[in-house]
Length: 624
Ligand code: GLU
Image (cartoon, rainbow, N blue to C red; front, top):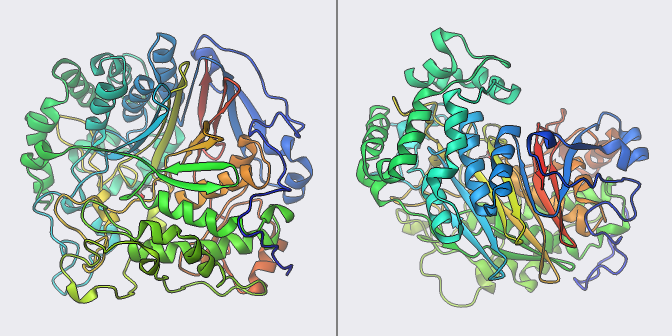
């Protein structure tokens, strides 16, 4: 094993120069058409990995992922579905801004991929307002209802209810925030009315604009059918027959709900008949949510966390998402290694990544929760001395940090915490304990990320979710939308910063990100993937900042994942020799590969946008 060259965080003198577009130092030529029509641009151009990194990709074979890209000067939309991207592009085309377009994309996604996000869920929306040169986050994370209790996921024996059961319970449903976010975002930053932006969603849900079931939706229906209540069953598996790819998807109840919102605004959803129907079905499934919980719901507007890597400033959602702090810590841990001196796919690079992930996830699990109710050592976690101390645990000759204990960032945090311990467990104050987190396998990529840009330079980076595919499987009868199971992101066992409390938001990993370079917006990026979102976004930033990759290359590059536990997941393209070497170092490398994440990004360069959609799942980009 080669020794790491430490450069003490003084910048990357030898880093390959990149502007992120792949147009310098790369053999790739990007299409530079400026598309005014939207439909014509769907799936506009594809950049096979093999074209941009031919020799490596050939050696590693099978890594034939394709990043879908398009360029434009007047605007950009990147999402997982062509109809949703088209809805956003149409708004931009008609003079709407990036915030307007993002709201249209969200409603369209609810109609065409109802298993991934929708008005029954929540998320985090980053908005860069060019005129103010200011970045905001509209935190629309679901909240626990007032009747929620710390032990609501325990059975009579005091043991956590098995995860597969927990995810279907009424107790798992958080008070949804997505619709409130649409409303607040438009009132604060938009130029169009919600009634206008919901129109494509109505067309798509009603069948006026025919929609067929795509592969991801068909797979999700087949896998999750067991969770469906009668209302969901009648839409997605009528007569017990699950819809298949290519079947027509018509959701009249959802279309009616959208029509009601178009006519009456969000009032009925939070304070009217839809709120009553939501509370009723949640209670039928054992939850405590009342119409009052919906009436009380509001979003918060925050400023995202700040991480640095070289000349990039990485701004990502703050707590209750662990994304911002954890990505910032991972990047800080890694920067001093000057990894650019190694091959991206070398054992040295993977080893450093895995050990940094172990360290960062140990702290994540110990210290993070909803900032409104528990304190976290924000500055301590990113304190230079603290991170240096943690980094010094990384050995060069062998793996050693699986299961590592969290550090003590409180020792580096100025001021007294207002509350460290969980509300129900004073005895646990300042203890380092290992709590039971959500089982990992059920937490993989069941969400959606989309991003928009407009001709004024405004940007949106929005990760939206109902947690697992189809959430709880509970559809609100006669209203046609699925209810999330986001509250399973809380620890099932009481006694830590992420225990269940009324009005609290469960700890998230979602990491909608906007990266700045020399103070100017440089790129947006984000991904689904549960806890893997953090390592996906970290690796994409690292690929650009340290390894000089273009954004499409950075997204296509095979990823790895580890948290505090020993298991290391990897994607095809990570060579068998590399895995063997990592195994020899002592890492526990999984036998089979696993696809990790599905990123959407926009690169901003010289007044031009390059939109990128991950090739791991179908993505669609339209530049204007
Ligand atoms: N519930 C997850 C979180 O907030 C997101 C869902 C996923 O991507 O799997 O971290």
